[in-house]
Length: 74
Image (cartoon, rainbow, N blue to C red; front, side, top):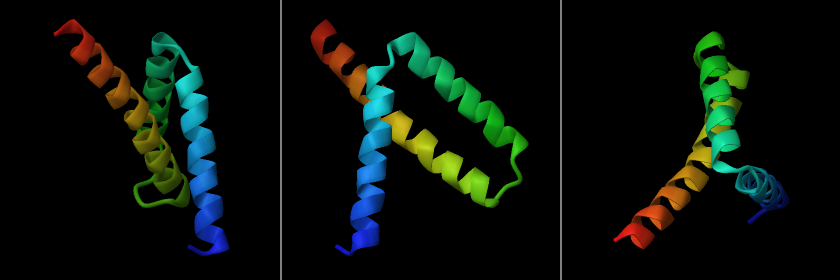
């Protein structure tokens, strides 16, 4: 991978770490804030694209936590 790809991956990991550090309530609140902001941004704008990518990253943490909760409840 090139330097730009490695840097982007490192940025994604840093964002994942930030989301992972939040408790469930804070994570869900942050996602609600991001969704509200997405509704305000013009479709296809650079800000909308970047925020969509951030929401996608936060969904990874939500999915992981839901999967873990589901597997421990069974």
